[in-house]
Length: 260
Image (cartoon, rainbow, N blue to C red; front, side, top):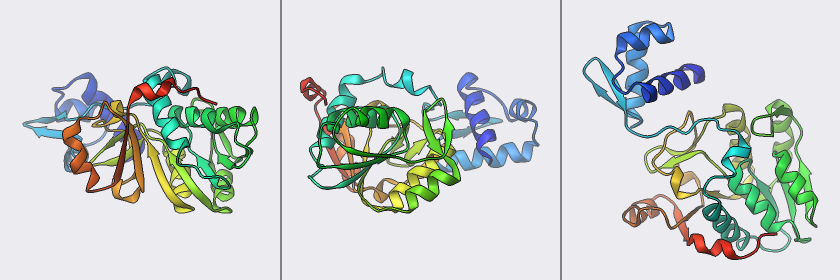
């Protein structure tokens, strides 16, 4: 299933929960057999449930909302997660920060530290870090305006040249079944390279993203070293999640500590 067709299919299912295979075939311009195969794939992933003549969504879908808009959501939770992440960074480490709103707050939290080297593919993150004392490297590449990130072959080649002690990963959706997911194939490509080049990978994911699905898989949860999330996560999930990955729960009120 292509990225564009998956995106279109999920959007159609969200807009019309009882849409039929025939309607999907007409809307997507593909054969009924292709639609059935796509639905079978999504059903195997737990994204949809097959019903007679079609399918219904099992999970809400995270879409490519502009970075500036996402930064306004779950602010207390994201700041609390960022502060907890900052506490894990020892002096002298080489740190990679993913694109995204939670890692933006992490950039604010560490920008005054002169004992760190920080790499990022995010222009806003680099601008924040540049106002402080960190040694900051912005990888080059193709500029993606909506996310204000750098992607593509040049970015991938730059990221592959270095080793990172810690990579703080962001995502638009996560779950036990599907791991961490995002909406941009271009950004996901760079995330995976950062993961490959890093000693430890720590995902910073607010609880509102749990149980959602998105367009592209980044990695299963057991590929991560830790997930930091807020206390909005259902406590009954914690034991099950801990079987896959170390999960650190942070009270949102901790965001009262000043960033940067």
